[in-house]
Length: 391
Image (cartoon, rainbow, N blue to C red; front, side, top):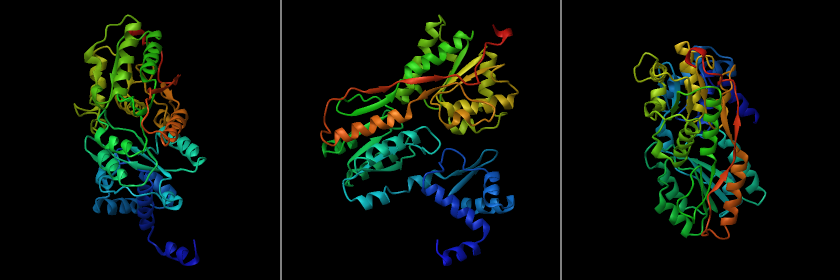
């Protein structure tokens, strides 16, 4: 930074520096529309300012429609920020010239997920071969943002696409247009139903089955299943649900449909405990049905289950056991807990995706069997023996 820039920075109001910082984090994808941005306390500590100054900055961004605030939850990036962004070639793409960039299209911010390790491993592999990567966040939530980005990519001179669909709708017509023009496509976290598409997934069924076996070995027989979207929306979620059912069957337990909740959306998770639609209310209902353990679609939902249990005065794992899936940042977000979970091999996924993309540059249309990457059981501190009075 030159002297003039330093002088201008020092003269900028403190709240203006905070605004500039948040906007830069949004541009780089560090903040997502579906999780709160850093807390007021974080910003106070980072910039050495008062809470009033921080709130002034946040209020300015809210008035501009960049942030939205949910009482008792925090400030979120407005989803429209993502909807209005046009896919653009990355600076690396401009430096390397046409045809040397691989696009990763994902439905959410990967900054706080294991997918960051996947992306980094794929980037390292492709960089060594003279290719660079760029990430596009589709922020899909039942809309066609993913299709829009893919259609724009058909007009750009790129080498290949790694696509993580939000649901089983992979926008086949647009992917076909990419493939038929010689641009390989690799599906991530979704086994392909079309053998000419390569795909890479984790062993979701086997991993979930192992979690349930762990719980039944501890004596649990009333085990609930929680997800944020319908089981039929994604084949990988269907695999996790199937693992849950088979795990119960392995222990001779008949599944109970009333213990399966598949609409634990972010909006519902954000509701106050006294709201009858809140996660806390759902957990109370499950407890009344004799539930002693909960397995969750992923670690993020498990994290919110732990928070709700704390609000209800339930001890984990003494009163109720909780499991997640993924072993990402959410698994260790609570300082005194680590969620019992299933670890995906994020690096192996990234390396495999990169290899398939590179091979596809020579022959984009070839027969592929879905690649399933093994998972690993991680015993944390959120599972324990069934409470004695429930045994």
